[in-house]
Length: 195
Ligand SMILES: [Zn+2]
Image 1 (tube, rainbow, N blue to C red):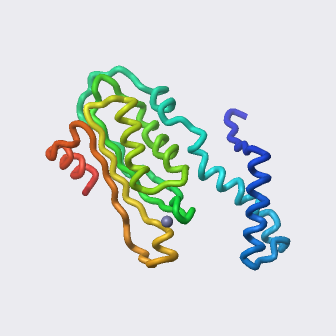
Image 2: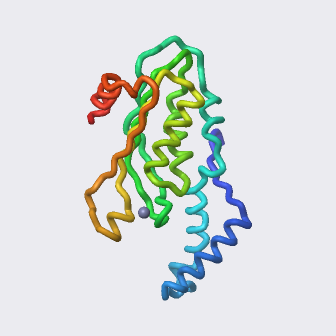
């Protein structure tokens, strides 16, 4: 077999979380032994570990693993990066897109690493504002570019399914460092991502 993909879960954590989900299902008034639900606590325990795997990953290491000396010094943009996270207030999903730009300062980074660090920070309990800052700071401190910009647009299930039930609202957050603090550079970036 040339390629094999597998998931590995910590047995003790899975067991503990599974028991808690079983209790939650019972507390909600359901029959945890019903056929369709028998394996649900275990599946949910694995799903929540998958969705929070970012706690065990090091974004700095990921970036450092693919940095290359290069004299290119124009803006590099990766836009429309799919993003799935969990709001820390309700443990409900928020999802949307991230757009990242940087201007190199002697070093570039493998392009696939930018979506990967979005995932590392998104797969934790988050608020969109902090997620934006963490991605920004991580790139800025590790790659030390001339500038970095991050824009995130996301829909929050906790707003859509409960509370105010605003189904079509999108929350936008952004952060800019270095050259992107200049209005012309920032505007060029925003134009290129269609904002
Ligand atoms: Zn929320």
